Every structure is written in C-alpha cells, then in structure tokens.
Image (cartoon, each protein chain N blue to C red):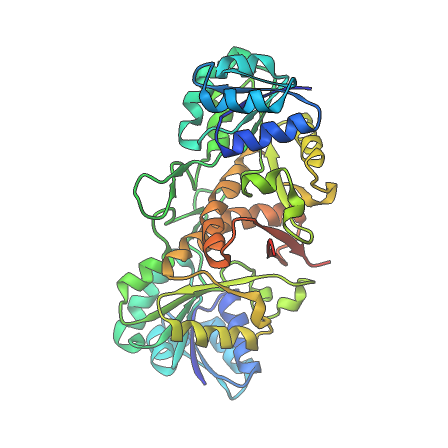
Length: 218
Length: 218
C-alpha cells in the first residue's frame, strides 16, 4: 500500500518505519521537501521510503496519517491540500496539546469539540479516523511493550475507513479484540481529553510505556 | 467513624449504604432536613443512619463525601459551611457534568481547571481528595462487579487525607495495589476529563459497569 505520513517527529518517524517494515511504500511529508529529519529517515529506511512536502506525501498515499503536532495539524493539512486527500482515509493520531504555558499541558480544543472533529469539518471529503493518540509512539506500533491485554480506540464517521484503520492496527500487533470502536468522530473528544489523565498516569507510574485495559461486567 | 454524605442521588445513597454496612455512622445531607429520599434511605438503613441538612451532615462527619451533582457542588458545600468542614477530609466523587444541552454531556469546568481544584480553592481549610468519580456508583463500593484487576485513582494535596481515603476505598473492596495516587489536586483535571471517554466506553460496551486497568511496561 502507498501511505503518506504527515509529520517528521517521533510519532511520524515511528509510524513511517513500522509501515515500511510491514512492506508498505511510505512517503513522509514536511512543510517542504528536503526536511532534514525526513531525509535522514528516508535515507536510512531503504527503497520503500521517500520524503517530500505535505502535499507530495498526501498525493502519494492511498491513505495518510496525521502525525503532526495537534496545534499545527490544521495548517499542515491545508498545506497537504483538500484535493490530495479527498476520498482518502486519514488516520489522525495527533493530540491538540498546548505546552506553551510552561506548566501542565492543556488542550487547544476540548469538551464540546475536538481536533478529530475539527479536521473532519474542515475536510468533509476526507474519511477521518481518530486512532492511536492514547498511547506513546513506541506503543502505537508495538503494543506488546505493555504486558497483558490492553485497549486501543478508534472512532470516525466512515465504517469502511475504520475497517482499513483496524487492519493497519492489527498489522502493528494490536489483537482484533483489543481494538474498541467508540462510534462517530465526536468520540475524539473523549480520546483526546483522556490525555490529561494519561499525562498523570505517566507521572505516577514513571513510564510512558503504558496503556489501559477496558474491563466490563460479563 | 462518623461520616457525612452530601447528596441524596444514586451515588450518595450507594456510598451511604456501603458505609453503614461497614459499621460507620452516616448522616446523609440535603438542601434541607427531611428530604424525602434521605428520610427513606435513613429509615431503611437502620440505627447507624440519619439525615439532615448539608450543614447537619457536614457537622456530624469527621469526614465527608461530596456526592452532589458536580454543577451544584459549590453551592451545596457553601450551604454545608466552611466552618463545619474545616480541617476535615472531603472525598469529592462528583463530576461537573452539564447535560443541559440535550446532546452529549459536557463538563462545566475542564482543561486548565477542575471541580476538585475549584472546591479546594473555595475551601482552603478542607482536605480535598478526588476519588471514585471514574466509575459508576455500584462499582465504587463493589469493585468486584468488574472482573479482573482494575484501577481507581486518588489525588489531593494532603497525604494524610489520601491515606484516609485509601482506607475507605480498601473497605469498599479495592485492593491496595489497585489504588493509584496521581499526585496533587490538579490531577482532578484528568480524572474528570476522563468522563468524556468513559461515556463513550459505556456506549460502545453497552454497560456502565466498567473500568480501566492501568498497565505499564515492567
């Protein structure tokens, strides 16, 4: 599969590498082609890897990941271009974190809206799936780093898009019954607001390699 | 122990009953003494149970639970009175849910503040512990309803208060290693914002008798 990964940070590089490792052709996108991190990754990752602008990566991919910083995602996606993304699945793994205050990070959008919904509204032709934003990058592509069973969430308005996302998650090692569909894209509120708890779980346990297992009465 | 339970809803009645069942003397508080639900509970619950105004219940308790609706908690606590609560542990189990829009509930406070912090600021002499707000009432006092291990959170500024809260939680059946201290009262943000996710977990799994188990890398 041809996949565009928007973003050159830890999350983008981790996802891009995991996708290449599974045989996908991946183009990493940045503000402009030739981004140093994207070039370094692409050079090291071999013939399935390439890099370019956000627009290049979006045009290249049959499916794309939004792995840009949440606060900058809208702008990055505008640069990618609605035309390049139209009709495609966009897996949004970003969190709208604002760390600018210097104290505890807050969210740039929450409560009655979310980044996932914001993206879906701004790009109505894109099939947005929120996924993977509730775990650190390493765990996204290697759930076995966290022992035992644990849960990963997906949400979005397009069932077919969620099925495709599920397939990629299973490729990363998420067991089918660990993937919990929370419904339409408005569930992105809960998935993003969970970050406030996640940050304290990290602080309390001393590791970001953590996740939650959802348990229910039989 | 003498315990005041502020609130006559499902959460208040469930907590009050569980406390009486464990041998505590419990006074349930409402806006005014003689509240029909409080009287019905008190009459049924036997000699350890009594009812009165918020002020009566706060004065009666060596420790109190805030089990009022989150959006009304500040007012209820003002009625209880800072003097009646001063120096005491207040276990805040409320969620600041606003269901008035008719669609998905939102929070009346979140992101850079929380109900727990609001209460602590308004009543600086009270030793506020946020706890139990992440599970439905039945699970608060009977964690075994959810199979397997799962996690309950506490936070607050006063270590002694958290130790007391922990003891009560253990009395409800929470194993010591299932109780995770998230730090100071600002962690109430994450514990309350989690509600947005919890509501979708309820929707997706079809049961409110649910919880999460925190899992970390070894």
